[in-house]
Structures are given as C-alpha cells and as structure tokens.
Length: 72
Figure (cartoon, rainbow, N blue to C red):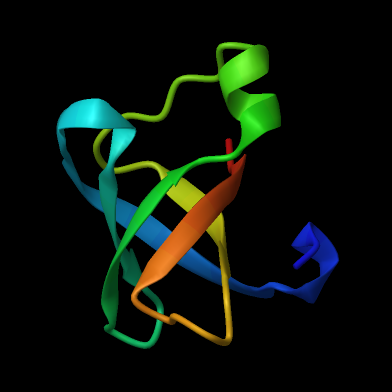
C-alpha cells in the first residue's frame, strides 16, 4: 500500500514511547500508536510531546499510523 492510500488525520502527540513509538490523540478523540515515516527519520526531524502532527492511517488497521508531517 502506497502512502497516497492512507487516510490523513490531524493529531497531537500525547506520549513518547521507546523504539520510536508515539501515542497520538486525533481530532476525533481516538488515540493511536504511530511511528515516524522514513523521510522524517532521514532528515532528523524531531517530534516532541505536544507537537501537532499529520498522521497517515491505514484503512486495514486503524489503530496504527505513520507520522507524515510536523506542524510548526
């Protein structure tokens, strides 16, 4: 599945876990686990507690996501 097929939601980082796992609370009050996408890891974009992010969520497993963008 390509990144274009993911449903994108806005959310806020609520918890930073080990191994690059983040808990993200979406705008519709659903909390999911997410990890950084490859480009964010490649260019060392840091995501900290409280950041507003865009998360791509697969329609097959809506409990996991991919952090695609960090808003300023």
